[in-house]
Length: 263
Image (cartoon, rainbow, N blue to C red; front, top):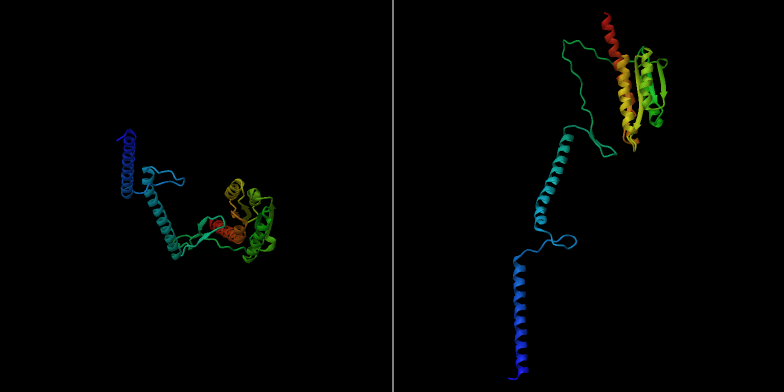
């Protein structure tokens, strides 16, 4: 055999050996693919480490528990509705529960001082805010109607408009100090805006009106709406009627106390 033929034979043998090695590697890869699970990859196609894959199971369990918790809360809300609790959702997405009705039952044998919303032979002052006048003017009209229904004569009613809810306490204090009125009814409307102004005005109006009543001993009824939206305020205009009734009831209770002290 010549040297050229010997080289050709060796080359052919090498090619055949390489081909056999490739086939063996391919067969080995197929076996590995059949045994090993498919590798986890992220959205970009990169392989995920083992710890990231392992963390998915607890996360999925937490999501399932959260769904079950939401279902339990929904079931609880239905249960409260079945018991007679009234739940409403306002425009701001805030869920509130209305007050629970019922009367105070005083057992026999106790001295009882309980006022009634009666207006006969009484004078009443109303201090009303001009700010948000589209709401407060309607509240004033409701209050005047409620006073008339309670028997307060027109000549016994004094109305004092003030610039805003912040000025309501000062107006109420001035009216109460005259000692001419059995009670003072404060009417106003504060609607939440984009700044903390709402919180300051609402808080000062509430605390100031209470202080006016404490300092003078004259009942000051709180008829100030503090709402998130205009539609909420429009739905609560009749709160002015409740303020009138509260003022007259306290005035009647105080009259009973004064009469009992003199006897």
